Length: 355
Image (tube, rainbow, N blue to C red):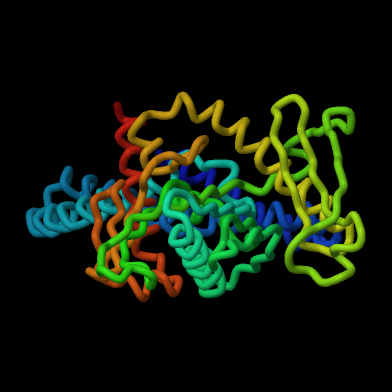
């Protein structure tokens, strides 16, 4: 343990030195990669140094216990008890910090929200979720960009896809994948009956060209005239794009931009991320059922959360946590849910490592 912590401290210092090198500063990609690693180790290195200091203090006090001075031995004995307690607490913190990192946690992400069962009410709820996540992004100082939107005639959204960029975006938002259920009385309901509707959320790590290789001969690209919002120019030109990935059958469409080129770029971004998610799901099949519950992947069929409007409560079914702060959460205050789910996920990982 001590050797591993010393290596972390040494690597942290080495990264700081590399980041001050003018050649590396001039290489934005390399500098960004080093900065992310330095930031990650920055959470560990101070605690690693503190652990080593405590460990050395205990060793010094244990040496005193081998001596003849009774008064010093009593002081050392008391100090060892206090120091060992602090060391145990620090050890637990370091265990979590040293858990294997998901290589995708530092990536930007794509979020897809689709209305499910419940007709117009489901579409309105999908719009609520879209607003909730954009508010959450703004509170985190993350940048979000709309990639595709399909509005519902009766109000709300049938589907919306947007990208989010910032620090550790996927590592935080990945816990939001799954089925979100809403219970409320629709405005059109005259008898006051509570209706249940649902929307699915898929959170995908944003794939880069180096992550997923797509050959042109694997793609079928169709253009067509866009429909809906966008003005006359959009509807008069074949600016909309439909891309079919022939090996998997995945289809991505984009028609929100008036430029065919921009629509193609956005569609390719979504396609790359869906293909990468497909590969991740193959790996995740080996994941334990407990961890699958925390981080839903693949078909997004896991019911993760219920939003009950009459009672003003939200329940997360993965950790059996109910919070009576519906309005605050729908305004983007998701921190408490995400932090507690992440903590539970870390506990499961620790249990699996020690099994």
